[in-house]
Every structure is written in C-alpha cells, then in structure tokens.
Image 1 (cartoon, rainbow, N blue to C red):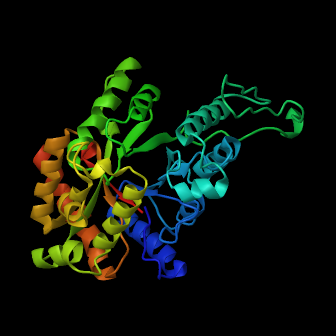
Image 2 (image 1 turned 30 degrees about the vertical axis):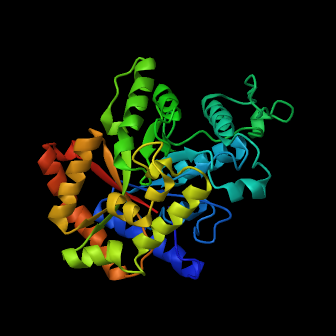
Image 3 (image 1 turned 45 degrees about the horizontal axis):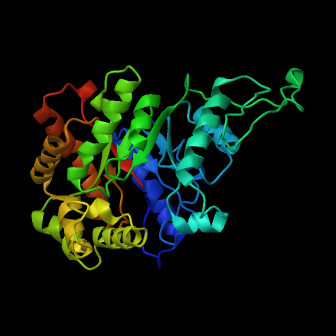
Length: 370
C-alpha cells in the first residue's frame, strides 16, 4: 500500500517504491503486492499493472502481485485481458490480487458511490474466470450479472479476431483477496473457490483467527482440507540494529513514517465507519482508538531477536499461516528502511523458521507490500 506524505514528488516516491521491490527481490522476498487508488494524493500508484510492468525486467525471482486490482473500477473484459497479458510478460511471476476497491473518493469519481462494490467484485471475477476458461466467441451471461460478454457478431477465427488471451499459468494465476473486516463472510467464498486470503495489516491481531476460521469453513464446503500455507498475514514491521533507534523511528519521532501511516489509516477508517478493526471488541468506545494504540499494537519493531519474538507471538495467537507480508512505508530515512528489509530477510526470517521447526522449502515466507 504505497502511502507517502502529500508534499512529496511522485517522481521520487514511485522510484523509491520501485527500489524497494528491486531490493526485496535481491534479498529473496517471495512476492510483492502493490496497491492502487485513483484519487488519493498520498497513494501514488494509480494502476498496479502499469507499475509492476516496470519491474518485470528489473527483478529476477520475486512474484509480482496486484495488491489489489480494484474490480469495481474497470470492465472485467479489460481486467481479464490485462492480467493475462501481464502473466505472459512476467512468464508466470504473477499473482492476481483482487478487491472491490474501498476508497470512497474513487467510487464517487467513477460514478459508482451508490453501487454495491462487493457485488460488482463478485460479478466481475465470475466473468474474468469464464473468459479464461472458455473459448470464443464466448457466451457469458450469468443470471443477475450486469456484465454480458460475447464476440459472436464479430468473431473471425481464421484471423484470430474476437479472441482473448488466456493466462500463461495454467489453469490460472494464484488469486489472492485482501481481507480487512473481522468475521468477513467473503473469506468463506474465497475458500470455496480456492482464492487465498491476505489479512490486512490494519487489523488488531485478535481478529485474525476469524479470517482463518471462515476460510477453513469455505475449504471444507468445497470438499478440501484447509491448508494454513494458503493464508497470508500482513504486518507493519521495522527491524534495526539498535532498540532505541527502532523505537524512535517506528513510534516516537514526529516524522516517523509509521506514525504518518497510522495517523492516515486511523483518519480514513474512522471516516468510513470501518474502525472496528482497531477495537478490542465491537462496542468499545471510539475514544479508545488512538494513534498510540495503533503504533503499540500494530507496529512490530526492535532488534532482530525482539522482532523474532513478536512474530512468534503473533503466530501463537493467530495460528499457523504461510506468509508474513512486510508492509512497506515511506522512506523517511532510506538507510534505516533498507537496513530493516535486510535484517528481516537475512536474520529475522531464518530464526523464525528455525524456531517453528520447518524445512526451508516449507518455511514461513515473507513478502513485500507497497
């Protein structure tokens, strides 16, 4: 989720975000999720496909993931074609992250503020998958679905007209859905359809188990055994060589990128009436949702061993999961930001995986989120 102070030049912040993913690739991070918004001055990426395409040849092994592609904001024919092409360009180093698109100002600008964007997401993904599964001239007309797709009037098979890409990966790329709300019913549907959940870093940790419980229920409904390896959890993490530096940069400084991030997120969630994610229980008074609480509860920080302990405590609380997603911040201090990523990859994660007693091939993966 690229989030930068509004005074910063997008030319600089876009390059900074690219540099973070290039570094993550060099350090062996597993995947990189990049968000997108159209109408937020602080969020500089307006189209995650365009941004990620600039990284295909600058990286070697990291999987490039939309984090997410907002399916309410474009016709599913457009997204199906773009995602399939990207998969070919990346030769399968692609994860298709999806969501409805939560930013209200985006919806207003597009004239869909009054629409049920969750319903639009469900309708769009049905059409995208149908395009990838079927052959032209297509006949996609699901009952109650606003999107109807056919090329029957213009299909000329001998010259390839009226034909759409299928993805490079067979039968399709991994599909990941970001989950924010506690007890989200959408996670049940993810489990039923073999989409994989990514629990947002916004969520207080005691809500995380509700995501796993619902995903597991969906997998069982589909006749499958729930696999914790399919569940990602995002957290805000800062690792430093010195505990005082870690505490200052992650929580105390007025210029801390973490303080800026959580001040922004608190304001946005409060305005959207979605701030239950920051509460200990649904009826807790709004006054309890302070920036200090968010910094204390949602920023894992310290030297290597402290962060290892915090990650192991998180796993003890949430249950097993397959990947920790390291949420990217603005680089107020590039040296500290890069050092944190290095320590995360080279020291924290090996110690975490050793502590949970898994082989490297099955280790708790780490991902970068921008």
